[in-house]
Image (cartoon, rainbow, N blue to C red; front, side):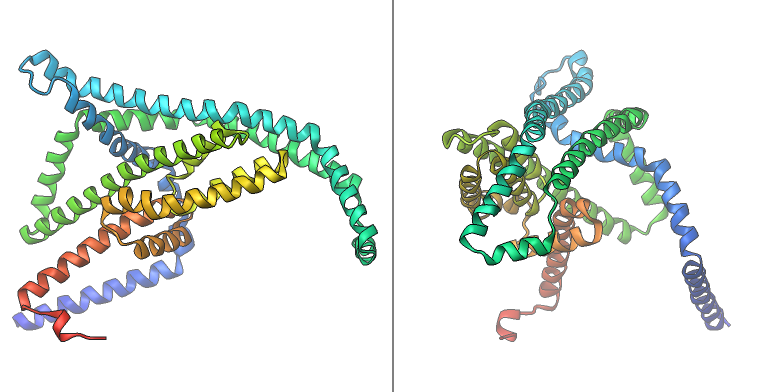
Length: 381
């Protein structure tokens, strides 16, 4: 009877799972719509905890400097609030500095483009006419294309004005999101102030509802995850500062325009693994090429050399060494992460792959030790 009871429970379990799976398949649109609404509600809280996690890395550094050997009760109580305040000030200063470097020069660049747009179109038109004299067959091709240069200039100016209009719309959207920003800040500050208390509460809940072995494994997974993400974020910040500084200094040495803006942009985009440096090079080349085509090409060459230095010397030592992920797996992680999650996947793919890599490596090493396997002697390719 006992065996029959267990069999019945197993059958009911799989039947229930199959029924739930079928319901999900036939109602996936409603389920996804509900999940999207739920995400809209809880996303500020989630972002608050994510921001708290990043801010914690800076806060811990300041806590280490705040009278570490003191026995003064007042100083000890003030350590956490003061460290949180200093961490927030640090983040704000960095954001303001980057915007201060980028926005004024970006506005000046857009104004210059709008002023010089008719001249640029006229220059391109004269260049094509000169080519027609050298290569008469181009004239036939151009006529077949039926290019209306006045319409091109008008459309380009309209496109530039639309960009400015969309920038204003984006500013209005950011202003209307002030409430969400306040919620994120409140959640982040509360999480940091109550960090130890939240950790104790989570541990109590997990211990109460999980088996001891499962709880031990989960603790190990969370520890590896925390080490990978914290090391990755710290390494990426250091690497971004170094790369942005190298771009700025190099552009100043070679007298390239927009050194401050492109350097700050390069440092910010360097936070996106693999793709960020390429994107900043493309944007920088386009900006300089509009003002001086020869300098634009030289900047592209300069950036290629600098990216080789960054990819082969800086990134592997600072980021790769900190997360313990081989270079090929970093490339695969960025490719798959970007394909699945878009821009967020470029950033999250590497630390997630690092966690999976470390867990699999740890499990393989455990099994090798447990079964006393010598893979190098038993497997040859």
